[in-house]
Amino acid sequence: MTYRTRFAPSPTGPLHLGHAFSALTGFDRAQAAGGQFLLRMDDIDRDRSKPAYAAQAMDDLRWLGLTWPEPVLFQSASAPAVQAAVERLAALGLTYPCSCTRSDIAAAAGAPQEGAPLHGPDGIVYPGTCRGRPMAHFREGDALRLDMARAAAQGALPSFEETGPLHAGIHRLDAAALIQTVGDVVIARKGGGIAYHISVVVDDHGQGITEVVRGADLFDTTPIHVLLFHLLGWPVPAYHHHRLIRDEAGKRLAKRDDARAIATYRAEGRTPADIRAMVGL
Ligand code: GLU
Image 1 (tube, rainbow, N blue to C red):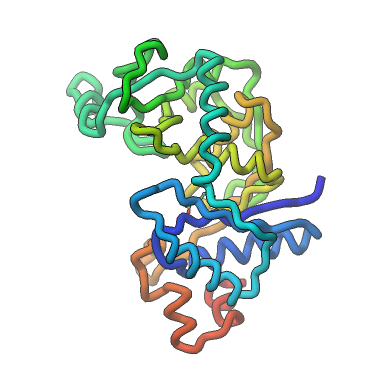
Image 2 (image 1 turned 120 degrees about the vertical axis):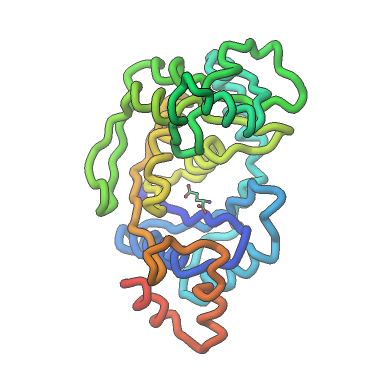
């Protein structure tokens, strides 16, 4: 199978050195394998995504020397495919409608008899207030959640290959860990919004991605994605989680770190080779 990876930034701010490292790592791995590098715009956050950020990101990445096939997929265009995947999970009896607000969840998880609330990749592990509500009771404004205990009981759980330096090896999904430390993740957002985990899996499958290259901060979400591939009957890609680029204080760079924006370095007259050197490539 031909190697294919993607870089999928969210166009919610200027790209910084951490994005440059991620994109260059994916591009270099695709080159080395004689495969393909795709760019995808993860624009599912309707309030924060801006076309101007997407345009600036493409300009910065071209300046860095990256190329990719056109047209670039904007994830918002995948809404029908995501909806179809959600309906398949619902048909398997793995989803339920949930009307809880963030504060409902914090209050239920923080009740004294519950002990300290457990935090998973999506924040507080959902305490299960709406679990078991039938899909027929879905009301306008509800989210849909995956019933993790049921999902983790759908056949033998798969494993995935991690090729990154930090967790290299084969990782088998563990039902107890999924139930306890991840819980019932949101699979469709309130008001019809696209949820991250399912959209990433639908697009990685649709684009034929063979290796997902991304930051180590997303390693804990990978079992969710691998489980979704398994439930949908799709082949599981390999994963490569790379180290994170940090500032002098050791903090991971964020979109608001304008000082480290690629555009800032460009304006200062730095070269693409300077950027590669700064991120240790
Ligand atoms: N859009 C996500 C981000 O910028 C990355 C998605 C992914 O690689 O799965 O953090």
